[in-house]
Length: 316
Image (tube, rainbow, N blue to C red):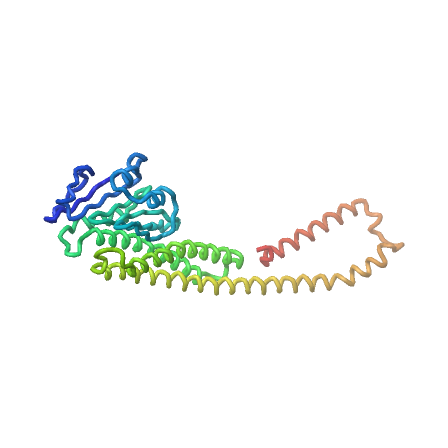
């Protein structure tokens, strides 16, 4: 699906008009959004816009790292949208050229829809333009990173406030799961931070100086997110070391108990090994069911020790 947004020089908003009917002489700028484009629609990137073949290839080959490439007067951005539940990323490509912005993505994104609504609702905004629309798109994506970071922080707070009835191994598994989530989030936040750093320091995008405060604000948000992720990773490292120390101490306690039990039975086993059962007066040898009684006793003893170890949590 392709949709069009045209802002005319007299600040009128024209939506969903055919691409070939866009009069660039009358348009202040326009936005073309490719959402789940069909193959024939994707060909417009080359046939109508004449974008660089490498940029088109990056659009069609997922998943690229967030980046900024310059092709003469067209600038190509790779952005990442984040699913706050699964922390999976989706690529969103964006072209900025003289008087236009083009977004290209393989699935719908509510961030693009929100940016589209904001831009079309304020055509007279004094800073309005294709660069401002690009800022709104990037800002919407970055704003969606914060809920994911807060969810992980809440999990850490609940985890830290939990009681001591949870097994150590279970807590270790939870810590590693949270660290895995933080790693996924970091793989999105840090490249996006580097992308914004390149944007605010590049000299190749005409008219960018007027929009630098906006992009700098997004960069500050990403700096804050990176600090949140890193501080939480440090916290999970401390928690991991703490629970591994508890696990090691618990294992030492178990080994000490087992060593005591083994030490107690060592002389008994030694005596039994020397003397065996070689006594003349052993009434048990004449018991009709003695063999089965001993087997049952051995089974009960083994089961009893197993239950005892289980209650003490030595198998966790």
